[in-house]
Amino acid sequence: MKAVQELVAYFDKRGQLSRRQLVRLLDKNYIASVPPTSMHGLCEVVGQTYYFRVTGASEGQIWGTDVYTRDSTIGAAAVHMGLLKPGQTAVLRLTIAPAQAAYPGSTRNGVTTNDYADYPQCWKLSAL
Image 1 (tube, rainbow, N blue to C red):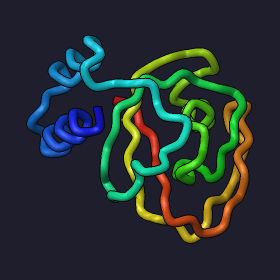
Image 2: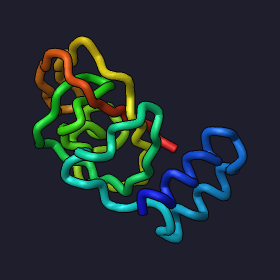
Image 3: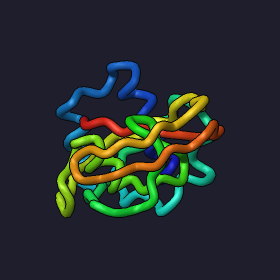
């Protein structure tokens, strides 16, 4: 699955994959999978992109705001960012981000995140 996601991200980043083509691949479940419980082992390359079928959650361990530490709960981050409501499912783009000096916590959309000091691996979410 990781190799397929890397290939799709390669073409998506270069504008060589239309939104229609991307949605078709996602609708057929060719590239979007349920997110792992931990991004451990998937955060080594800054800019790497994954497509996950995420279900919004109102609870979970989460550190940061807009950029989250590697071990944060993806479904809770999606609700915190306003991309999903709890229980709602959609395909989201997760991109590995450069390490941050600090990850400030905040409360948004009913989800409270925690502060964390510098951490070497992190990610951010976006809608398609």
